[in-house]
Image (cartoon, rainbow, N blue to C red; front, side):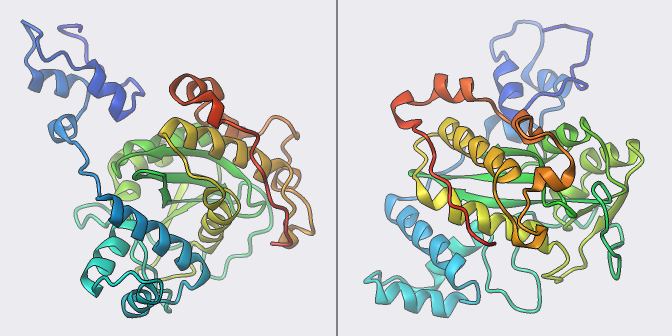
Length: 323
């Protein structure tokens, strides 16, 4: 490690920064190494506590049922689990649903995975009454929970509102802002919108995130607090991804999840027909040549093949519908 040069400007993931730390370095203490890498010391020592296998089973059931009945609150979801012979109390169901960022859909926004930070600046919502008439007029982003065979991870994506085209995406095992910033920079590498819309979660209100947008000359819009429909298009994307991809398989590793999500987003952008787009694909409406989707700049296939079991990486099965 360089004694004088700061590494703050390097685009590294949290995991890469952790791996760059040398605990036994004789001249640079760990606190100074964290400072040079712009890594919070808490992130260095953070180790996620896993859920029990039974709780993971409950989370899978709740997640799948939520897609079918998003209006089920804590009490109804608890009763539904009882009908399935899982006699758990409402306190456990509440904790697990909060952990997954799930809340019954009322005329207010569900509990987000991204939690607000009162010290961050909140930008006004700019899309009220606006007609979205062209690509790159408005982009948006959000975070969702992705189940795995053991455990879970978090998915973020940047979407063009007009075409529904997924411009970039990224996954992470934690909810820190770095993976959201990485997806944003990836998207801006291909162009920029006039307006970028997010919720008020701390990942999106952080200076690291908003500075990237301001430096690119992009107007920032943020959902009104408690507004369930302000970011509706990307909420619909999450339902589509889960029904057509996530629930069709059990990801054994993070690498396998990356691989199949990459395959799915390629399909979604270039082949999936959308009724709202007059049965055209998002890539066709967005104006991207089929076969070179921007979303493929997300984690690559070789990484998955190296880290995962090649025997599990079969051809994915995709479902076309009229959605």
